[in-house]
Image 1 (cartoon, one colour):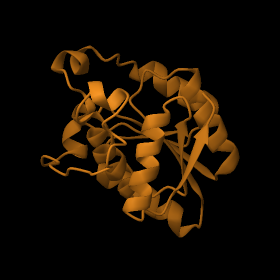
Image 2: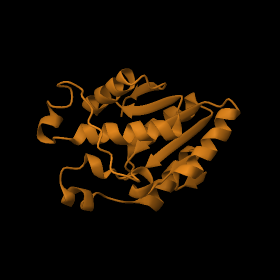
Image 3: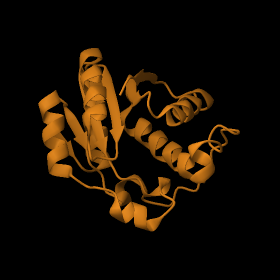
Length: 175
């Protein structure tokens, strides 16, 4: 398993894999991996030649600096879990790698991101869309895996892929 920390190194790895015609399954996470994440990785492993997992605590989806600061970070344990599943690449970028300049994009998902969880966390799903769109651009996955449990996030991701014609199959998994 390779651990990659820069976008340049990731792009180089992805380019080589794509040149070989390999399928890439992608599981974006914020770390603190649990059984649900592991199920996503196992499913990705069965469907793809290569599995990439990102571990990135995305600041743009937190409403509270306290919540961001207190989010659990268990990188070494997370990497061991990834290796046990057979993940090929773990992408662990810094905030500066993902956001070299501020991301001021505002996505319009109609009411999809403003009800339920979005009602209590304004801007949360916009931050999710910002980071996922960046990660899709870097990883160029064949398939990306998300838990059905987070159905509002899943709906936002599907809308993002549809609205921006992103060439990736979204696979919803029971978690």
